[in-house]
Image (cartoon, rainbow, N blue to C red):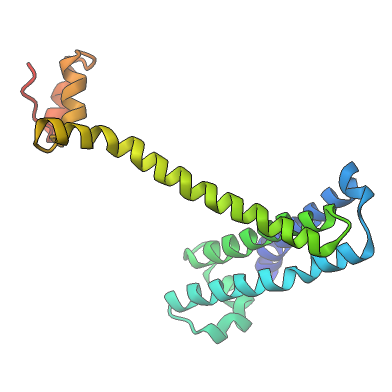
Length: 191
């Protein structure tokens, strides 16, 4: 039980203490801090931990335990500490849930109205999610656009060693690097 408390429970409590310190020491947040906002912020901890425990249950199932074994979580972590990846996964899941809770709770605490804070927090997460989707789709376009143009104008697919051949044709690789790459399996006809 000592390993669970020292290596897992204490860091999770320190994450919560970190958010409390930000709320108490922040000049803007301190002005709008009241009992109702703090109560709603800690009330938000319940759904975030429920979601975290749902994913912890899935991790336990993946390693051969049942979802009901969540009640024996300290014992499971004690047995698998530094031997299996399960303890790290559980720590990361609960830690990330606490970090996201802190972001949402900070949005609630910063406003004088808890409902307005909840809506602002949800809007922040929606904006981040939407921008992530747009960013991923733009990165895919930037990566795929030259390849599509090449296929459109030339009429054939790019060679898998296209970039390696491009580098060799410009002479940026030394002879020994070229020999090492050839021994690995890249054959070039750029000499």
